[in-house]
Structure formats: structure tokens, C-alpha cells
Image 1 (cartoon, rainbow, N blue to C red):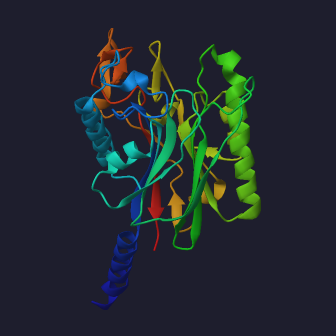
Image 2 (image 1 turned 180 degrees about the horizontal axis):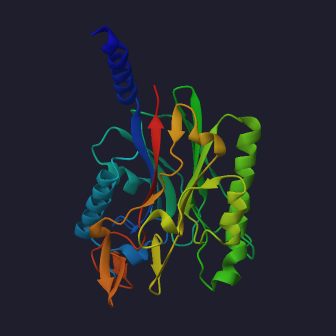
Image 3 (image 1 turned 90 degrees about the vertical axis):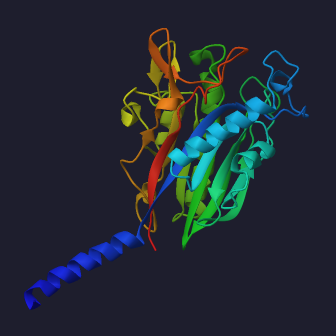
Length: 316
């Protein structure tokens, strides 16, 4: 029996270590135009029951349930950044009666009336502070785009900064609109520099629909400071978005180098683009995202983007 004792101690020690660890998900999801049905102060006329889209309570509740279904499939992320949301109220409607979640949201000056925000697990993370980065794009005289929303969380003795982005669209052409996205990248990079100078031990996670592919100038600018974890290899389709039957990555997650160590430990190879069967459909023989609308035609799907995620090991 004595000769087996060291082996038993090793086995039980490994079991105890495994049980002490906790694997959690950090995710981002462009939910495609989540508007409530109330006529608010923003430009929401397109998503009212009397509008051409005939957006109503039944469709709104169905979309809320779809987002919750995705969250459950993602193992109820400890942080989930979202974009294309109308206001704080829709975030509160997503979480419903789930008291584990808190929300981070700020109204942005976006011309379409859409914002970015975050859901986070209050039972695991402590929200220390939050804010937004507002900026004026080239060619504009006032801010007209989505803010970059940030939050500082605490887990044990570690600080984690999360930035949620929805950079300017490619409207007018990818090349012509590129300077607008590069401005957003510069603003995000300035914030990252400030965090790393003032709190060098803090971990940083940047996520969002950057409306650019990994090889484009704006994501490349930020990737000089953070490590991208989402790529065309993160799912079998080669992307999170399909444009003219071509898949590519518009939805990104990047992390600071120190994020892969410590008590809040990001897993280096854990980046995923999720293609659950219900998130996909066929169009003209091609597999594409199962979206909510095509123009004014209601399709009843989930989103025109796929969710992306990384895994984090939480150590005691």
C-alpha cells in the first residue's frame, strides 16, 4: 500500500486542482438591430409597428429569446459585449429575471440610433468603473458614430479592462471609408496605451464588430498592442459574416499579452466563431447567417453575424 500512496496523493492533488479551476466564456455578438417597439428620442422610426418592417412586441420577444438561447449555448458568458442595440432597456430585457447579470451601457450619438454595451456576471466579477470614448470621424464636425464603451472589472486581485467596439461601416466603399475606422482604431489604441502606462498589470480585452478584416489597416494597428484570438480558422466557414457569398472575420477579440497568465487566465488557442445550426440558413445554395431581416422582409432569424468567444480559466 505504501508504494501506491504517492500515486494516490498525485491523483487526488490533480483532481483538487481541476475542481478548483473554473472555465468561463467571454463573448461578443452583433445582435442585428435589437430595437424595442417604443417610439424613443433616437432615430428608431424604422423599427416601429407602423413602419414598413412592422416590428412589433411578438417579434421583439422572439428575438430576445433567441439571444438568450445563444447565451445559453455559450455557457452564459461572464462578459458578453453586444452591438446594434437601441438602449439600456433592451439589455435589461435580454437578462430578464436573471439577477446574476449586470449591464454597462451609454447612449451614443450614432445616426442610426444604435449603441454598444456589455452584460457581465455580477456573481463572478466586480464592476469597478466604466465609461465611453467619443470621437469625431474624418469628414464630420460632430461625433456621429458609436462610442467605444469600456469597463474595468475586478476578479480576485486582478483588474480586467474590456472595450466593446462597433466601428464605422463600409458604406461608400471599403477603401473610401477606411479612414473612419482607422480613427476608431487610433482612439482605442490611445486608451490601451493609457491603461498600460497607469495600470501595467491590468489585463485588456478588446472586442467588437470592427467592420474590417484581420489584414486591414485599422485592426492591424490595434494588433500591434494586443493579440488577436479570432481568425478565419476559428470556424469551418472562415468567418463571422458573409458578404456576397464570401465568409470573413468582421467580429474580433484581442487581448493583452499578460491576459494569458494569472488568476483570470485567457486561453491562447480558445478563439471561436460559433456556427450553431440554428444560426445558419441556406440562400441560393450557399450557407449564410440566419438573419432577422432582409431589407424590410422579416425572416425571423437570429442575426447577420455569428457570435465569437474566448475561454478563460478562473483560478482561486
